[in-house]
Length: 81
Image 1 (cartoon, rainbow, N blue to C red):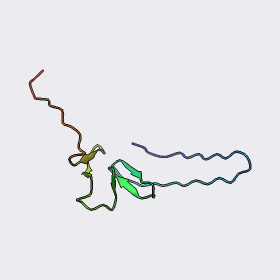
Image 2 (image 1 turned 90 degrees about the vertical axis):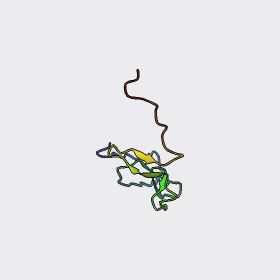
Image 3 (image 1 turned 180 degrees about the vertical axis):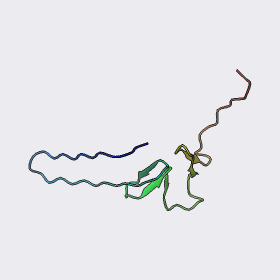
Image 4 (image 1 turned 45 degrees about the horizontal axis):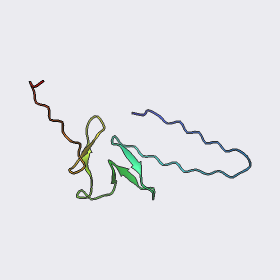
């Protein structure tokens, strides 16, 4: 988990330089689509519940994905080697 961010932008020579910085705060993994909209757990932030790929985040900050995007569950049985 990040506690802060350091940003450094350098330009060399006599050229105009521009950049864009996007940020969001969420416990869940998040990124930005090509059009700049926020995606949380691989779904648009404003997606309807039916269109979301997850049901939210765990306390550890991991996406709780819905099928067919959910992680496979390992077949571990208590007491078995």
